[in-house]
Image (cartoon, rainbow, N blue to C red):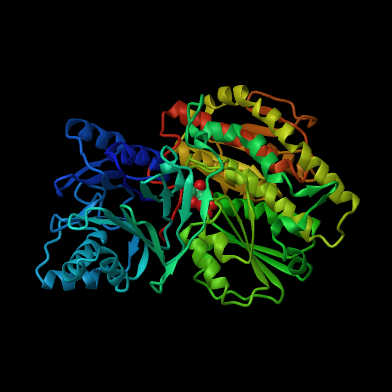
Length: 609
Ligand code: G6P
């Protein structure tokens, strides 16, 4: 979704803003722009439809020069992707604003401004905010007060940054529903949607909270005000992942780098959370032990890939911990009348911790009488973690590829830790065996990554196809769903996943030589049943690609290819089987020449509904 960068420095900010925009490209966008206030007090703006590179070309021809500026990548919501709709938006040529989010009441506000004679240059909701702030500023010549007054009139979600030619050493930022961080430099300060955008200039950040407004000013530094306009102090945090997190290193794409990081980030996710042969429930927070003892049911809510992690966890929680579990996508959950049985724990899963539907679901759940809420999340300080009773951070580090990979597998590991922490039979042989298997998981994943070459070869069978079917049973059904999601996200091949037992209730009608069928078939208790399903596909001339445990006796034939996956405890198999499916979609996308890290129309962090 939209990305914001702003800088108030003692040097020309064009390069800082441009680098920031490049680092935000992963969030997904369709146009980009920048406005800078020059030494003579004049605002200059450049905007371009398409990639940041197109903006960069324009800036090479006509550079902007000034020590204060704001910049933006736009993901269209109100109004088509176009240069006219790209941010920054101006009011009276003196004020510039960039905005992420949606202003829900923009139509009545726009009509009111039009009646007063304001001419609009774009179709965006943002331009309304620009004019409202400019008008409030005319009255008092106080940019902070003008923004605060305007925010009181708008409904919706936003992160924004505003500057005014008549307040030449100030930038005002605000957040409600969309993320915004302050980058703290030496005598220079910044704003951005994500710390990654600013790692080239600082590693120290202040994470703004819901309703906060911030004024960056020369000399005055950083002043934060809460939703009630009271001055507040927010903690300074050091970004610990290093700037390497924002670069591809030797990898051709971030996605490939992130797939290969999985052994290391899973080891990091386990670190400090296992003791001897058991899981430390205190990893979930100091109060977790008391709360977990009362849990009788679980509701898990998430979106996209995170939802698939929740689906796997349901099998684990019911099988290993005997706790009835429901899993639901957040956009459905938040709009229905949910019945909450007594002593139910509400669990959200999210890489970003800022997904609008998941956050709204958490806020709705807070009104429903749950025992408590737990967020499993990858971004420290995110809204989801702040608003939940308990949180467990996955240690995936920044994930840049839009298609989620390492965030998913670290969520799975975290969910298995949760399952073990919730079991009544704590400290038994099963827990010890699983803890041991978890410790060995990074090494098993290293071996799974060695499948890269055979999978690259296999991907040629998919590159010319228009459809693909993924089959799995039990915990591998959500992995089949995730495999199909990865393939459609980055290669644009229509892919569907079915529980293998449902094959003959519909999808079998689609199977022919043009429909590759991928089956995930570890050597678990459902293998024999899955084998019969595979026969059904073969009998219809379908081309089968089976991912199976090293020991599984499945002979390859003309239309059946078998790829062996390293063997692990059956509970951990969904984590290991995810890796070859990630590699498959990656290689198919590379063959097709799609934009692997930034697939069309998709955003990394979906901060609007
Ligand atoms: C977007 C991303 C997906 C992600 C989903 C949920 O659709 O492209 O990769 O799974 O949002 O995001 P979250 O940050 O809540 O896990």
